[in-house]
Image 1 (cartoon, rainbow over the protein chains, first blue to last red):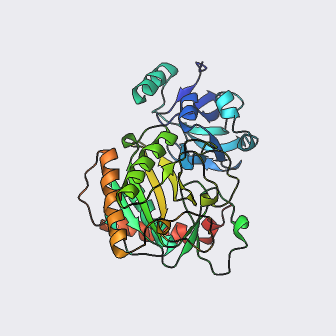
Image 2: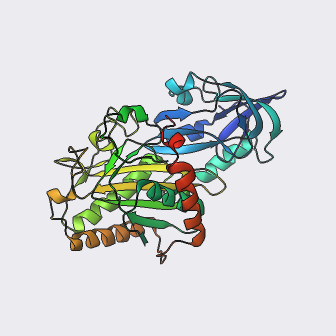
Image 3: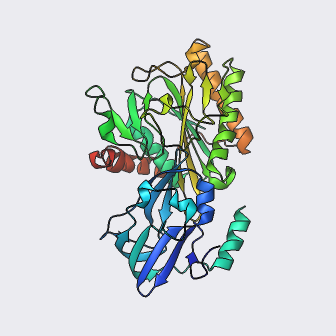
Length: 125
Length: 240
């Protein structure tokens, strides 16, 4: 089950806003289509991310995919353990497999709630 | 289909990068490497290649997977909207690889898709793409014949850059590969036939029909910029 306090992007990143801090990750749907994951690159603490821009990259099955930020702001935490424990993404994509915490200055106006995201995933097949 | 003369490594990667950004129709590009060069997978560490002979040209791809010594090979890139391929990445390799099996069979080269073994995504044991055949790779008795890797963007219109390296003659740094020359002599005719069979089979499975045979001025301008700013940039090449 996806927690109901998350917002999703069409590109399958999720974010949870708590005050002025956004926690960002990728959805169970994204993980299932990427399948076996090999490498992950996340930005360092202190760097900036921007709405719609790539904030990191992930490799699976010899394919590198970009990850896109749903918020603009400064990275205040990066899940440094995740790169060595990519199985967490399949186990707990909305829990311990979070990727970034960002101090938010702007958010995307193209995010969806869980129900709309469910419909989006069904449409993608 | 775009057919390019052999070019240096940075230019080759830059043109593919520009096509990924700008090509407005599915584009298959065939090219070669002059001088021969080593390309690293996007996530590989350059320190793992310190033993290469001094002066070996090295470029970092934007696609994943292991390193390839690009000698005499038929290299192709395919740029297209992701919706034209199976969403599951492993399934997309199966579709493209099966088409390439048929293209090779048409010129008398037999190979098969590995249907067992490690999943393709298992953390590679070898730094070389061709030394570590995994499930869905194209193999012969001699080893692995084709290297493949992808870069996927997930912007408003998700796109895929698919790289393929089909070995014609065995390159120096990776003698363990299979090569087309194991089964047919590499002549000009064989090169042309292989190219046209590849185009025909890929077009068939993707349901595309492209008449394009030149790059646009905008694609060339972006390629020139990417070559200078990214693929010849030491900081990018040595980023890991």
